[in-house]
Amino acid sequence: MATKIYIDQGHNPENPNAGAVGNGLREQDITYRVGQELATLLRADGDYEVRLSRPTATSSLGTSNTTSLRARVNDANAWGADYFISIHTNASENAAASGTEAFAYSQPSRAFSLGEDIVEGITNVTGLRDRGMKVRPSLYVLRKTAMPAVLVELGFITNPGDAALMNENPALFARGIYNGIEAFLR
Image (cartoon, rainbow, N blue to C red; front, side, top):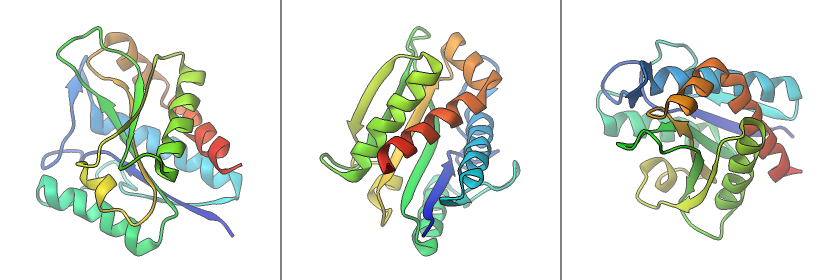
């Protein structure tokens, strides 16, 4: 039986719920591309069924931040996903801030363990700093999903190096997430 992975490409192409900006890039464009690359890898594997929150570049969910988040969670819950992975880019006032981190609702949990493997998978292929796995029960997509859910911050869109790597090689980040999923499930 195929494992059902729900890939939530964080944010909408335009407001409501547009993402962070930095170095001339938009979070929602990077998360869209990484999600598409990840879906391609998972589908090629044959062990996975995949659903994307944003199947097209113009897909927009909800009419506010709240309804956008609710639409993503409700779609994953209704589909019966086994795992929910929300893809984001980080941002900081400090342009030197760099690296990959992820969040889960609680620890210990399957989501926390999956997140550790995903962060390790990304940092192994990108060379970015491992900022670790953290607990963040306040995040809607972690709190309201019926399955283990991880929110991944790929890198900092406000850091020129991280931003360039995410923009120029979204497939590398997708490969890191895929490797993390594989490490966790195998």
